[in-house]
Length: 306
Image 1 (cartoon, rainbow, N blue to C red):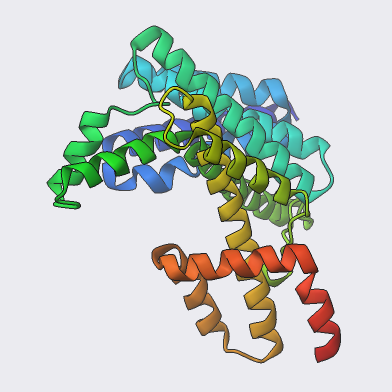
Image 2: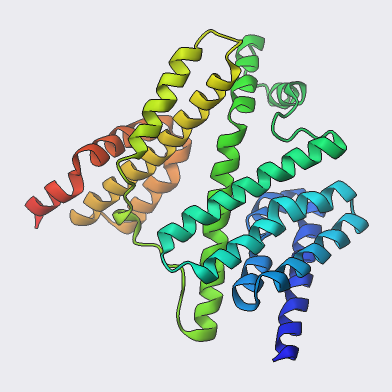
């Protein structure tokens, strides 16, 4: 038994270190690898316990920091390793997939927030408010947009939505790592612990509308008031978060009816993939999602179509 634990610990540590080095050395792979940075820690914590996973990810982070950059090691531990340890620990205790996803995304966001604050305190890296000059230079490099005023507005908006982006990334990261860990566990034991319902059945609780209302009120109160930055921050991020959830609900509702009417699966997949890149589609799904949450459209019309 001890040999099996040591083998899993060694493999997880080596896998974490390999991912950290790959993401650092090959920028083209940075984004896809960051989504699975926590995976070895999640799997080890789920199968072998909290402290076994914690020591593994701590060693991998220290080695990455020593070989590459000290601040990078701290980033890897607090923003990816520690969330993986906690997600794996929660997965071992939580039986419901929905509750597990919410808890995992929450601890992932909390760890990333803590990591950002620690990096700022010790190294001066402010990940929670990226440099406006760097963002403007990036936009100007690609020539979009040409108007300095528009560029500045885009930069201000991007800085304002950093918390939303952290929440979104933490959620996607949690889903990816939980699905992969569950798939590995299923191969080992024949039973998956994390199973999401079909996308056409996804539905969010009605209390999400409260978040939308609060975001709208905060945004309206802070409109044109530079001194009310906290309200602007809350309004922008709550509104964007609500919009994303409503868009997912609306797209799920659309897929539900497309399935009922026999729309080919490749077309449904194309609609899902194209939605983030077509703003009009996003706005349509937000409206559909709001209607579905408010009036339970799927159940009412679904009964008629049966």
